[in-house]
Structure formats: structure tokens, C-alpha cells
Amino acid sequence: MHRKDFIKQFGYLIAVLPASSALLSSCAGLYYASFVEEGRVLRISKGEFQQVKGGKQIERDFVVIQSDSMRYPIGIFKTQNSNYLASLMQCTHRGCELNIGGGIFNCPCHGSEFDRSGRVLEGPAEENLESFEITTDYENIYVHVR
Ligand code: FES
Image (cartoon, rainbow, N blue to C red; front, side):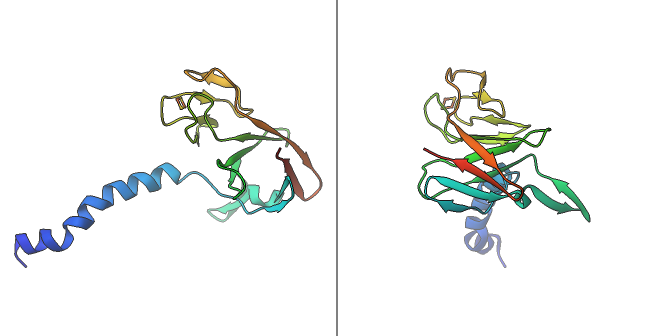
């Protein structure tokens, strides 16, 4: 195959691959949990926080849920004393969708950071994230959305 033919045939793939891998790596750490929507309550099994890695059962620090009825996902962190914190992943600066990394919410647009409970750690955002009441029972976590 001639160089020119090769570029014609695979040039598109070469152009698309770096963009695809960047997209995948930015989403690689987010686990989207299954849940059931019961009116204004989202029910998530506590089992969604467990995973098997290298043959061992370990706990996830957080999961993300995305409801069709909400424009942004909700990030749910599990605390050390087995409580849960839920915040809307919408930056309060100009509304970009947040990422989660290093145990905090961070904004890809202008760099704002929020702690696990949604409080501002770093601007330019000045307001805390919208957070939701959480109740639990033996098996489930209930996120009360408004
Ligand atoms: S939109 Fe998040 S820091 Fe500006």
C-alpha cells in the first residue's frame, strides 16, 4: 500500500483516536450507578458502592447517577462514617458540568473546586453546589430531589 493510500484510508482514524482517548480518560473514573426513580426520590442500592478489583471486594468513594428528569448528574460520596452526601454536578459559576477527581468536584471550564459536601474550595465560583437530603435503610440510599 502506498503512503498516500494509507493516509486516505486511515487518516480519519488517526485524527479521531486522540480525541476519543482524551474523552474516555476524562470519564474513566466515573461510575454511573443504577437507580430507581420513585417520584422525587432516587433509590440506589448500597451495593452500587461495592466493586471487585483484583479479586478483592472494595468500596467506591463515590458514584454518579444521571436522571432523565435532571439536566445534570448527581455525585454521591460515601463518607468514612458511612454517611452519604449528594450534590448536583452543575458548577455555580457559569453552569458547566463538573467532574469528580481526587475526592472533590472540579470544573473543567474555569477551575472551580468543591468539596464532597459541595462547599466551594476554590473560585471563581462563590456559591456552594446544590445538595440533596439523603436517607438510608439497610439496603438502599434515597436521594430526595426537589
Ligand atoms: S463554570 Fe465552573 S468555574 Fe466557571
